Length: 356
View 1 (cartoon, helix red, strand yellow):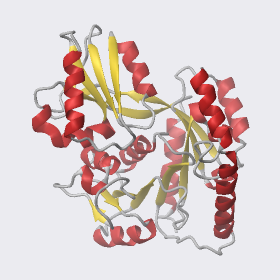
View 2 (view 1 turned 135 degrees about the vertical axis):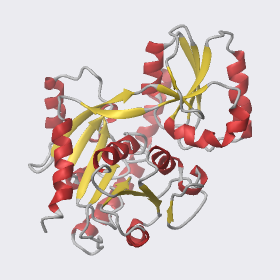
View 3 (view 1 turned 45 degrees about the vertical axis):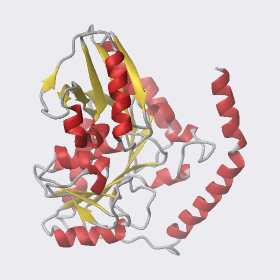
């Protein structure tokens, strides 16, 4: 409690810097609104998935949801900046591509959807024409984490906000977690409250909607995290754990709490090895992982990691071959039976380009 109070007090001290940052963002957004700074537009279905805050709101699983929804009928591509990759410029994922080349999140999508074009570029306004030139049959581009990058104007903006850290209750950096001003939410056509508690009721839903104060044209949806069957990091075989098992959880993501919650209900106990978000694993990390795993005395033991971490651990197949490393996949599940409504909104947007 004392530590939490101290942390909050420290963040309040940083409020003047947040106001300064907010002023800069406000001026920048006004310049775009007044066309002093211009956003490039494309007569082409661009779907943007983003958020206002730093940290995990479920952007990559939402991109995957959209890919699953659209790829059976359309030629879909994804475009992101490829955060923490070791390369620069525009690139399209190929058979021999690694997370080092394009970043962990694009690599995750590439591995799960090998027939979908996965591209990266620091500047999306340059990346989009290059993608269309390289893959001229592309019919839809999903822009991952591009909401705050206004150099490109997407036709459909999907804004995500974490139920446990809703943007209207937050502050701008560095006092809070927001990287864009709250009024930017008005640019979204769809707002999704993610990571909701499973038992969210209609009264709580309506209270959040009232506090979000959506514009008449904005649609609000709610999702929870749904976890699928564990699968082996290398063989991809499914795995159902014994409830008496003990687990070593390897996490290099912004918020591991949902995984901790599910493990607490599925196994006897777990130990967390926490790394920074987008952490690049090295040989020292492997030694640490092995040491912690060997300390677990229970014979029923295994290692669990996230899909995002899995793409960064995959290069150590030889070193981890003797260890039971399993991946826990997650996806969005819409609450209140509203998945069909959301999907119709997306499909209608895409189909509108065929009517022009």
